[in-house]
Length: 284
Image 1 (tube, helix red, strand yellow):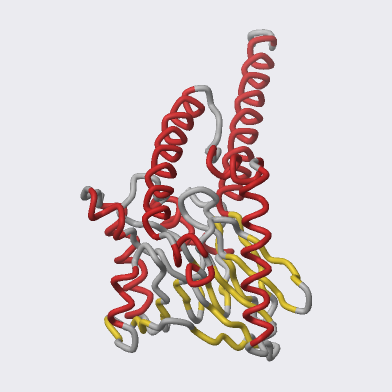
Image 2 (cartoon, rainbow, N blue to C red):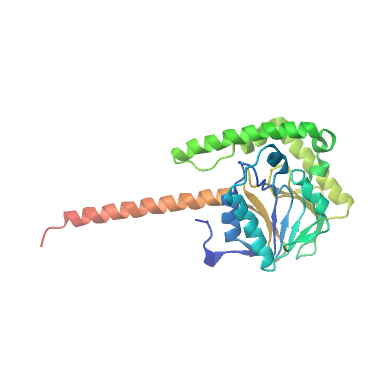
């Protein structure tokens, strides 16, 4: 069940999604499907790493839920929603198809997005500005294997948490926020991309790649990172007036589940109270 009822389903001018990593066990495909069913947009921009070619080359993993995500996106394209697909490093094979259209989806290396209030944003996956990916691809692949191990531990940890009534929690996301070196890397990455946008005369930059959702000002440039659908389950949306907003779907889902639990407990207490009242009434 989604946090937003269909009658209150919001519609946005643009929806930005990145780092879905279909084809991996860590992909939160069901949560993304929930999100897509609950949100409409006039345009969708896919900001790279939609599927994970690196992982698929090492072993095939493609459950029905991953097919369902593709089908949901294609259904929106067939309904007339323009979709721009900017490949990342994990789905880099799609860079061979830049300039082509398939099923209503246009493949581009980068994209210039003009907001409703007239601001220009450069949209790019962001791996082009990651020195590890650029200069030591073998190290990036090694890091990907270590990342897979952490995500595997995260999956088992969340299974245990669910047994005790806990909600989804990301071990890798917590580590990324806590480890000083990772925090320093993220800060440097943001600065490099903001500088690139400034050099191009853009008002901002929209990216992905590092799985760290953010919407902030870096100097004179608005830095926007879509996050991912492996750890944080986040998206960037553009409102009709041009305002950009970060949606944390995992948090919204947790809050909705918590509200439902509270409501169920309240109903249960009400039913018990009613039964006690009935029992205390004298027989006629």
